[in-house]
Image (cartoon, rainbow, N blue to C red; front, side):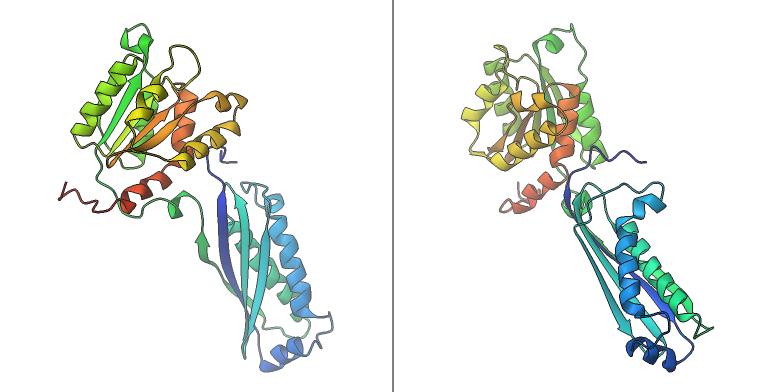
Length: 305
């Protein structure tokens, strides 16, 4: 199965449709009057659909087992057909469109099975996804943002040349995949004066987003939060909590990290862990949703800045 451990948990919904066509209005009347020999067609099919949705991962090899929070099955009976709509909801890391389509298919097949003794012209058609929602694609920004982005590595060993930077490179790669271009990349010692000087310089250049990696731990040399917090105009606790919560689900050591996020003027500043996994997971935790902040800034317009 596809690895979904990096994905965020969100409310996911999907609605699928299937259509069963019949040979005459008499068949539809028999369904509505509950006079089909095999029983109550719509209720039996509804039950089959509920089981199908919950057991999709047992039938489709690449589908992940997931908690199904809601399944709704609706019918529209026309003169020569029955339209089936199956809506599925979950709060999970991956979507439920296959579950909805599987449910719609089994509902249709159950109706077919129950009607075929009385109608030899029954057919199943138009099994399709009608609507889906949830996941990063719905919680980011639809349009591409032309942002100026800086990545700053705060590390004594990397700045001294005794260690190679990997975290800053991982952050840069992930931002590029999101369509963001890193226009400045710096490596500095984890010192309060160096960090503050770099932040002042980058903000003076009207950077939109500054991401620092390193110095957020609890050793005596980790001073990135101490350097940044006095300079921030507005902290954003929700983003900080989201980063730690996401990390905590993957390692208990995430609670020891002191990630800091906030605005200095109109510049979003993010201080992330210095480990490769911590930096990578922090980006996964809040991007691209965090980019919505730039749409909220009053007067955000590069032509006016």
